[in-house]
Image (cartoon, rainbow, N blue to C red; front, top):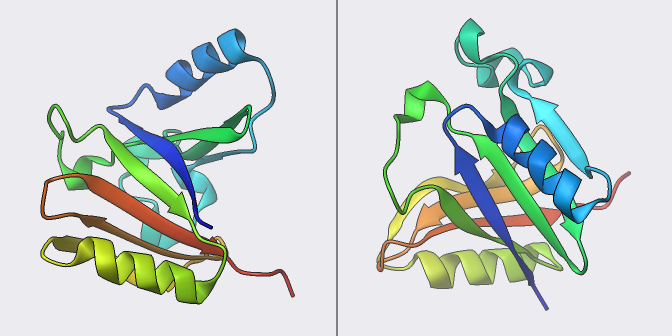
Amino acid sequence: MAVVHPYLNFGGNCGEAFDFYKSVFGGEFGMRMTFDNSPPEFQGDKGEAKKIMHVSLPIGTTVLMGSDRPASIGPGSAGENFSVSIHAESKAEADRLFNGLSAGGKVTMPMSNTFWGSYFGMWTDKFGVQWMMSFDQPKK
């Protein structure tokens, strides 16, 4: 069965926010990647190089995740600062849930293999809720 996690988006202070959350919840980051750690085609403008592309903080049985919103996407507005992130157990489950939940909505990133090793996609459903889907493919 798929697992659901909250995914928060920030306007440039994601690192500060997650340092704060870590100080409260404890634990260690599962991942903390800045835009300059990604391939050149995903880096955006130089002013965003040290902003957070992805961070994850395990809290109990869930994982709080987040990133800074790149300027190229725009500033966003209230209600656009979070997504529901689903981690599927298989590629077939990821496709089934993606296709079902995105029906009637707007796909912003079709399901595809990514440079970080996940099978991943994003969409906004027909009710305006933002979603992310990923399946972490087995390491070869």
